[in-house]
Picture 1 (cartoon, rainbow, N blue to C red):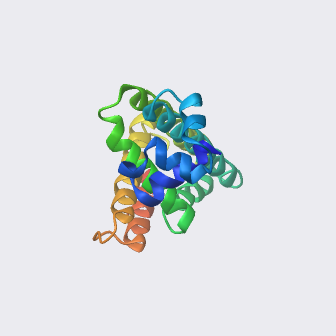
Picture 2: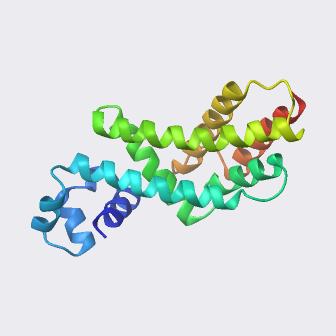
Length: 185
């Protein structure tokens, strides 16, 4: 309950609002309860990121189970693009943690662990695409994964930042073009 409230506060109000007091208020428990279970706001934030990231990754994995590897990869990309309130909330949360992870070692470790999981999902689908012939057979799976993940991160970041020049339609087009390059080699 507290971790869910922390994620909600960060995504809806921003990282600066994510104080122990505000999170306690949002989760409708006492500040003492929060401080009893979490030694610091950084520990609370790291655990909230871990929880939300695992949940989101599991959702993505479920949405990309059927069809060829290319179809599954396309479904995964479509699911991660911020085209609804929940996915936009996830991106705002992730962006907040990116900025904090630069300075906080515990958050950086959590961030790195979750990124490895995200990269592994994409790499598995690219490898499966090479094996089933839906993707070009000379692909360097590691480089293709890094490129696709970086592109997704970049366009989603730009869509999530309010007032940015990147529209969801443009982001989808850029990512689809990247997927087409994976097919063509």
